[in-house]
Image (cartoon, rainbow, N blue to C red):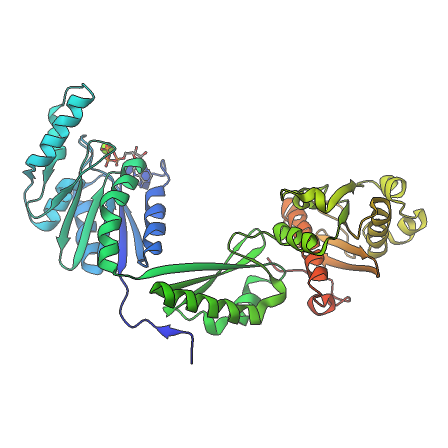
Length: 438
Ligand code: ATP
Ligand code: MG
């Protein structure tokens, strides 16, 4: 039985239309469109497009007609205010082929609003109580402009104010409940598996057969700060989606198990902390090019004193000798950026902190200092444990900050792989001087 079922019925699609000169001119970031699309996706509705137009009557009218011809659901934000550049109401009327009329209930609500805040109501506020005859007004609990609901062709249209607070209030009060009813008992369940240590393209290749466009569950990848996430979206009844997500997690895990460090919001450092606590083991750090970043990440989790008591930042060669006992000859012979020095740093730190594990990093974060043999981005990472020491040299791409962060994440991953008994030689053969490509 396949776990990828083509959708039995076509799912609802939406277009989000944002109105405002400040949006098209780049003065205001269009947060309404992203917020609305995120809400829609939680209801299982796909956003087909974001459209943005300025405060121009023909342009808004045209955009409404075009979008309504293409979609089931059209959400419009902005241009409902009382000023001359607020034209969405007129544009909706034009798109519907109607003239605006006064909505008596909306006018009464507006009058009451101004009475309550003890301000005079201007003539232009009257315009806010107008609607096309076939439309209905949506009350605005947080401001003056009522929203609008209309139908054009097969499209349901909702118009909300541009002010984010008012837009969100109207979504929650009126729009989401109506759409939920239309969508039936369908829910969307989203799960995320986070990986580190494999490039996005290779991750994609390994789960290619699960990433079929339009499939349910849908599987996709995203990258952020070196972490490649596999996202799973399942649509259906609560019970169906739970089973679909569990099955897909199992299939993805089968292919990618060594590089998956967590689910949903779990971090690499959180995963390492959990493993150290479960095993009752302690760790220490000896860092050069990462300047304490690994120690910072290891102590990011509350309760970290249970597994971390001390760490060293030994940036200069002298410091490596003096504080963690790296032999002078070793530095002379191999240079600070070398596997033997990384190993000696880890062993020296482990001994001094009396910890079960020690991780050490020494590398070239750039931008200068690289050579043909030891390029910028080359970092040696060593892990000392009761039975011995493992060390790997990895070349990280990017600029200084990125190299430092990737190296720290890799050090944490090496601890994680050691604690989960992964065969590091399989992930990084000792002779390979290479890292993830992104
Ligand atoms: P009001 O009745 O309050 O005038 P309105 O519907 O006329 O509401 P606009 O005048 O278009 O809304 O926008 C009001 C403010 O809301 C803008 O100054 C802008 O800061 C913000 N805003 C409008 N649209 C968006 C958007 N898409 N994303 C983020 N902020 C927005
Ligand atoms: Mg306005």
